[in-house]
Every structure is written in C-alpha cells, then in structure tokens.
Image 1 (cartoon, one colour):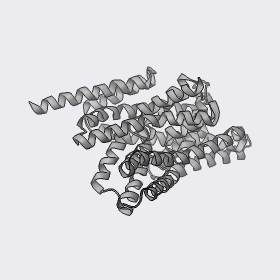
Image 2: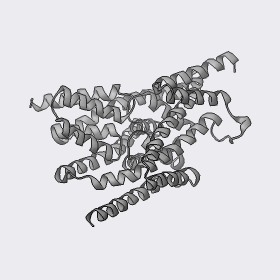
Image 3: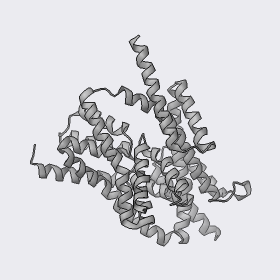
Image 4: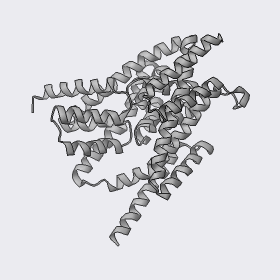
Length: 188
Length: 188
C-alpha cells in the first residue's frame, strides 16, 4: 500500500537524520530517488532548491512534496506523520532520561562520531546535485556537454558565499536571474 | 501560570509564527525560540533552555520539530508538544502543497525552468559552502579518528554507493565503542 510505503520511508528518514539542516538530504535522496524512484534526480534537485527558498525543515518539505506527488494530500499526511514520529518518541525519551540522569556523555560520544560521517554524506549528495545542475540527468559527464554558463554561476555563487558572506537565499535568486537573463539575451 | 487554554494558544501562535518566517534551518529557529520563551515570556529559565536545545539537536529528525516538542512538552505536557508540532509543520505543509501545484503547472514554462536551472547551480554552491565549513570544523578538531571517519564515509557513500543508513549505523556503533573506551581509560 502506497500510504504505508510513504510512511515507512519517511519514518526511516526521520529516524536516521542526525544533526539537522542538510543531514536529512542524503537520506531523502537514498529513499526517494534511488530506492523508490518517486522523484527523478532533477526533481529532487528542484525540491532541495525550493526547500532552501521556503521556511521549514527539508525533511518536512520533502514529505509534503513527495507525498502529494505520489498519493495526494493523504499521501503527504502519511509521509509527514512518518517523518515526525521518531522525533516525538525519541525526544520525549531523551528528555526523560536526561532529566533523571543529567548525563549525555554517551549520546554526545555517538554524535561526535556521526558528525564527520554526516558531513561526508552531505558532500556526496551535494556532488550529485552539482552533476545534475551542470550536466542534466542521465547525460554522461563529458566536457563538451557541460553547461558552462551554469558552471560559471556556480563558481560565482561560491565566491559570493565564501568571500562576501552573502545571504544564501539572495545568492540563489541572483543565480536564477542571471541564468534567465542570459537565455533571454542569447535567445535560446 | 496563566490558564491552560491561553498557554496552549500562545504556544500555537508563537510556534506557528516562528515556523512560517524562519529561513535558514533548525539552528536559527531554536535561537528564536529561546528569545521568545525565555527572554520575552519568561516561561523557561535560561539554563534549562540550553539543555532543551541540546536535546533537540542531539535527537534524530528536524531540529525545528524537536525544538517544538521539547518546548511544548516542558510548558504544557503531551498536549503542549502536540500543539507545538502542529504549529511547526503547518506552514511548510501549506506552502509546499501550494508550490507542488504550481510546480507541476509551471515547470515546463521557459522562464520558470531557466530560473530553476540557475538556482540549481546556486543551491549546489550553497551546499558546497556548507560542506567546506563543516569539513573545516572536523579537520580543525585535529582528531585523527574523526577525520578518518569523514574520509571513509565519503568513499563509502560517493564511490561505493553504500546505503547511507548502514553508514550511519556503523558510525553510531563506532561512537558507542569510542565512548566506552574513553570511559574505561578515565576510571583506570
């Protein structure tokens, strides 16, 4: 049953994403794109883009987006519920244990080992997004097929973010505007 | 404290507001929660809020949802947590539902597709910049085991395409072992 599948997939996403922010991204890619093929890689990249532009955690945004696409509003509800259920149980449990023992050494220790792995997995998901952005999906990565305009936009954005500490949302809007302006000018 | 209905309403309204207007992810939202519930309403003490934030950040799942659970639970028990969760997921749910409708209708539109294409390059840059910062943090930590975890996890997910859930489980287990070894060393 599709509702159960959505619920179960997003339950795993909620259960295994440690560290907030982008930590859920590799898991969503694995479950939603690789495993179930509910979204194509370009759709997933659009989803990450949209999530960055709107408020709300990426996992909740994805649950809504994927749920609606696959099974309408009930699908979105099933996916969202799956996504928050582990949080509800685990947070309450930790809160209770913490209030009792006031000791989180073990949990902190586990997190210290997870954090480097999470960085690595975000990097890996980021690479697939970059490939989708510059070469499109399915196309092989050939130098001749590279979208050089987008490659230049990517480099420009890095400079704006790293060097000038510009707000990511404005950087992305700028990237969109520059690309649109160029395609209008060159009349492609 | 004020009567319960009033408290629940206030939890609902302030969490809804925070969730609808906070861009920039979970870390930002917990800071704003502190401002609201500690500095403005004086419902939670400063030190206790730090503990609640630590719990929200160390549990799996979206930090915004976890933060809503701890604050809601602390202020009004299970009902408080339920109200806070509802208020947190309602804005992204509504916004993404609306966007999905437009996405399907407009993705093929020339201007929208050019805009999204440019923004994909932008989001790739945003992720790259986040990864640089996080990886820099791990490297500056100067812990050889953490750096090794980062490199191996990257090879596992990017080159070997190993399921990210296995990577998380293995690294979590590694964290348990590391913490146990450290504890044994301390007691000796």
